[in-house]
Length: 379
Image 1 (cartoon, rainbow, N blue to C red):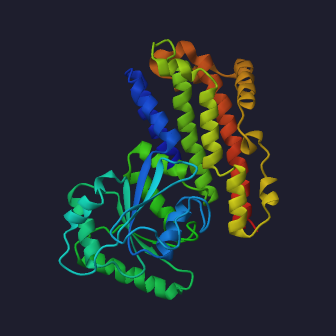
Image 2: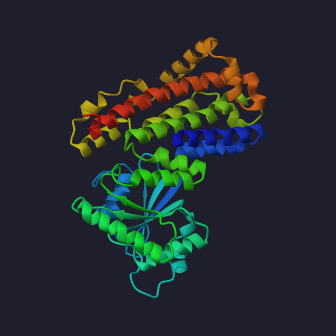
Image 3: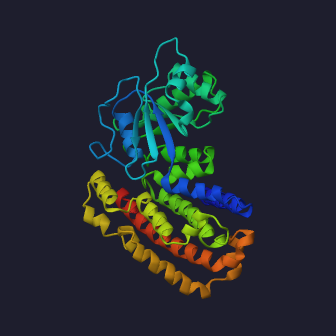
């Protein structure tokens, strides 16, 4: 439910921008959401766990095109970047490990890796955090960078008892060294749906600016049915912004607004939705390989035509149908959703919102079926 409110908060922010004629802010927000412009960094020793975590965040496995290799090709002191193949502006950065000895100057390390450019930073380990990791975290906090998180990689071989012992000792170490409220999470790199990663996502959504939080959400793979629902809600906020620009304020002479009337914007949104919900053939086939399943079994669960392929013809048909169905839409409800000065264009707004929201619902339903089947939920 919190994620629904998060999306509603984004809509209210965008409505306020339109009400004050700040259309460029809405345009920028829409564009950021469509391209998922975000930079996430991972600090820690380089090895299979770290590489697997990077690949899992990108929805990849070892050997896939664009995946981080098991043996890093960069020198220990260098930075490696792994853009998401489906969302190229969503970038994961493999930062050099911290030294385990003194002297260590956190400020020097942060300058070397250009720390401020990252929207969030994960400090990883397979044991209790080292002193230098804590020093780096405290330095980041002193610079008002709050999106820094400690993560403990849980290998498949570690026992639950050992894991809880490391968790407990890690929290004790962090508190004893001045971290008052540790942001500490246990993560299994090869299965992010397990342990604390869903909670880490929730905290990131709270800590990041709204647009950045939604950008992260839309670029991540569909790890759970709950994440599919969160994505659906985020897309509906995006649809509201697009519909507002398309119909709500088209009388204002802004070139970008005029172009929004064209169905190409709807195609961009639904193409983004298809990729974000991992409904395209490549994503479904990859998920089937990862879960040891027959690809045709998962592909057959896509009942919405847009889940299989987003075409301009299909989108135009849906927009036209929504226009014809507007007689059943309460204009009073439409006007309540629109910015104050845009009521005269309510039909155009309602048509785009209705068409795209219905499409998002259908695609999300397909994604939920696929994820549930792949994870064995409900069995």
